[in-house]
Length: 389
Image 1 (cartoon, helix red, strand yellow):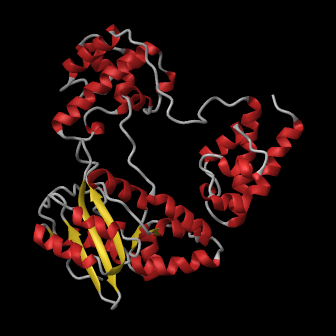
Image 2: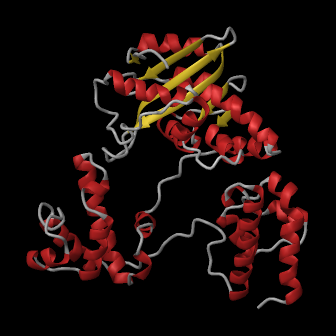
Image 3: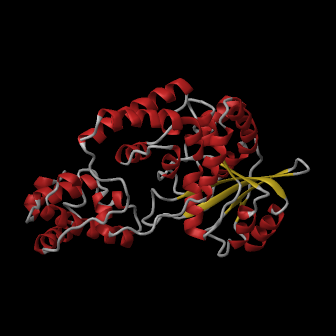
């Protein structure tokens, strides 16, 4: 268990830490953000555990809210000689690229490795408990990490998310190798380096991500868009997450009922909804604005393979999922580690007839071709032999 780890909030102290990291062999990393407490999420802490050739270790918690220039951290993160170890790396890598433009090389994700080892519970607390007999305290999972000062308990909580990762990596490498999945792990880790923050979406596309919008008419969708834009503006002004201003459920109810006065507004929403009280006047104005808008609502197509499947393609997708699930059960891994649903959908829509075509399918990994090409092509060939609609 580490001793109390100080918060590095001084530029000179940070530069000294970053300079030492050039000599480390392994660098475990984690971040804490404030997505549950702010309109615009940002990284509030960067925790590191560095392991050096002389078997010494260094733990540090960097305060990006107090240090203006974190560019010195970019060199060790991009250095391919240093293994960067994270757990559930997608989120942290995307956050650090989004906020600081960092580049990552030689990543290792202990969560992916645990999944490929067939470990059923692969959360960090589960793994640390299983491998090291230590119970991690997760009481600060929803804490507002932009708050200062940090208590000793909070600093301990933060650094424990990296403290055990180097030893955990060594344990998991051996388990993945024993299951013959090193090639799969290596390819998945390389793909983590390529992650990039998503570009901004058009407003209507973001609105369409709200569950339930598929049932709305064009006019209801225009009202919903006006209400959504109102909520975004309110949340930004208040610096609060949008769900703490007006819920998605309330937005959908308003778009469907479209109340025209305060009494109707209260009938549509639960009594304590801020959309019926504090923001009632603005909500009614937004509804009227949406009703008056006759702009055609269009959603840009952003992903190939999202069109409606024919009945024969739907049946093929069902068969592909059955094969995938049976394979996962036999190999004792999660189904998504055999093939995810997006890939299976592409296979059903544009079935390849040979290995070269299979390898060219968007999202198909080399290890999937090596392991499953014969089974996939045989299954798809059955469809061709039976005829297609």
